[in-house]
Length: 136
Image (cartoon, rainbow, N blue to C red):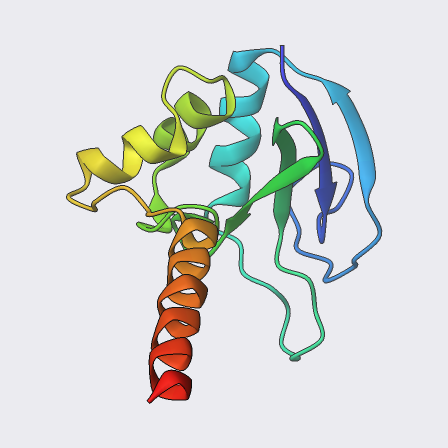
């Protein structure tokens, strides 16, 4: 059972409050979570740039919370390249039936490259070019 916390939501999940205060909702069953996601999907953050969107947060990777928030009929997950998903798709990700990467690939997105490796390669190439220029 996934453990969730929420932000920007009332106790009954039916109203967007805009609050950034995290509420620990504990462990929930898949059926309960799907119901929560269905309640959250149609909500939007209250007017105001500083308001927290109605969010269901869960730890998919140790030490990293993934945020699934309602946005006028869909669920958004900023960890996904697709971002937009149905409550049912979000449930599959949260319950680890499908990884975010697998979900993205199923929507036509290529897997993300390892930016750290790319940056390291860039530094090596830059160092070689600098050395070549310095030796001339």
